[in-house]
Amino acid sequence: MSFSFISKIALYLSFIFIISCQDRISSFNNKIDTIDNKFQLETEEFLDFSLYEDYQENVFDAYTYKASDYNFLDKDQNKLKINNYESKYKNNNSINVVYLGQSIYSINIDGELLKFDSNTGKLIERINIELDQVKKIPISFSLYENDFIIAFKSGEVVRINKQGEVVWVFKNQDLLNSPVKIYDEYIIILYPEKIIFLSILSGDIIFEKAFKSSNIIQSSGGKIEKYYNIVFFILPNSEFNSLDSYLFEEHNLNFDKIELNTSLNNLKDQIHIYKNFLVYFDNGDIFHTYDINSDKFILVDFRINNSSSARLLNNSLISKNENFLEFYNIKNGNLFSRININKILNKNSKIINAFIINQNMHLFTDDGKIIILNQNLEIQETINLKIKNINKVYNYQNKIFISTEKGITYIY
Image 1 (cartoon, rainbow, N blue to C red):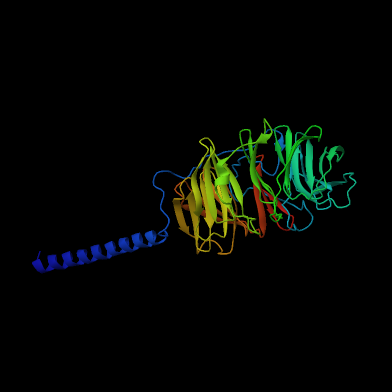
Image 2 (tube, helix red, strand yellow; image 1 turned 60 degrees about the horizontal axis):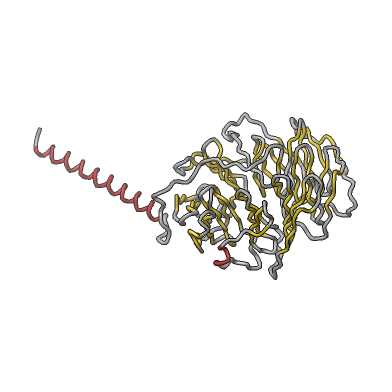
């Protein structure tokens, strides 16, 4: 073999090696460029893909979370479509649908109890509830054993049976725009400036406390979370507090050491419990993390990157902006990951909810897209449900419910 031939081969291999190295360097640099310099990558912890369910047997309300194993990749699985609200939602929360026996129940904008066939989704019966109020716009629809708990915008809360017969009525003149929560044998109601615990058996007041404020009452209502016997809540007037549900007295927190944003528009506020950590997500762009057991903050005033929508899931805050999905560790603000979604999601779409299903994360957007990510936060699939204007996604009884602004619910 000639020296000239060997030299040409060596030169050719060297050229390939240089090109390969340049490609790797370019790829590496592009990956680094996706992380903003002011945010650090998480290197000590992983995003938690465990299931943390929140439910009681024979109870279902707007806060219930019971995992589903529905496989959205299985095209043979059926879905139901029901018109449960019979109107568009106007600045109020979507109304749940409830499986009970062989039927599906819900309540429409006029306060009528609707009964649907669980196999076809067709309306079987329209049941009038005898109440002495003119407008019966519902705020929430919940199940307790074999009865329903209905909260109305007028401030009334009522317990009825499947036939629409009234068991008891609690009357109050305050505007109600927050779904009620069923907690043990109590119903927790968040009025604009007070919290009330009702007996679910009789409808009598067990505890009531006012929290006055000069803030604007928010149309999206309040928020509730619980940690053992401690109930954390944000009232519609933006007052944040906590109560011991055993002693019915305020639970002292060091939260008064921080300044929460109480602007005229704080509809994006969220509270979230993960193990012994309480997260307050303030105005959609700042979060604080509080260790309940040690009674101290571990993160204060952490501002996220230009978020248009966000959800809290386990130990992460998942944020979407025009270009990226970002996964923040709630304990220190470090990024678990940052994913470029320019070619995957509409830049104006918003995250509605996030679930762990079959050991994968499922992100639901308001324009009907589902992003499925594995435990390395790599996108496995993108699914288009072809459902627009989604305003709520929830799961219960091994089913997933998708509600739209038009008052329609799809059941998977």
